[in-house]
Image (cartoon, rainbow, N blue to C red; front, side, top):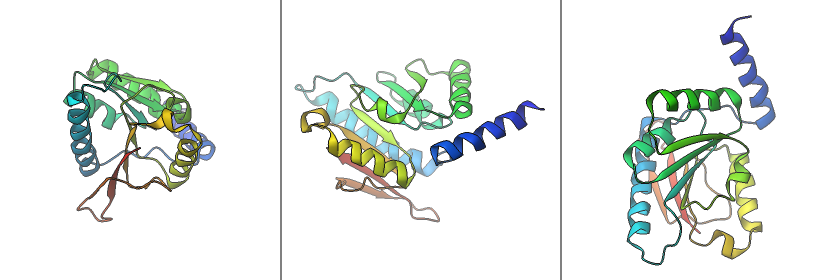
Length: 182
């Protein structure tokens, strides 16, 4: 059995388990997320009361392209891509080791455990089902635990939360990119 066939089979099995296939973000999504991220990183770095380290966590980082691109754009910020599916996670690790950047890392774990990170900003390009699960978990947390949290989400809204910014892409689907400041 070839390596490609085994990899494809693992992706299918894990897609059935997670309920979402690993779909890479496109250039327009990455650009919009980069714009919103840059605004928030600038705002946070100018805030003398901000005690959090400058950390960004990409929830469901998939193949790692967004995490690596943004880490290269912001070398003073630590980026962590979190992915549960083994093939996209392994690809992310290999490309990171090969091409960098040094301020990024990838971890294989469930995205809900990543919410416990002391991050400044969370990125998400998740399915509607996973966004609902994320919203439910955020609503169940004490207000102190989510204060000053920023979530930037491509394509799918965070149900029950109001975004403070929405960028509409000029693609076939007019894809929205949301920013939430909790």
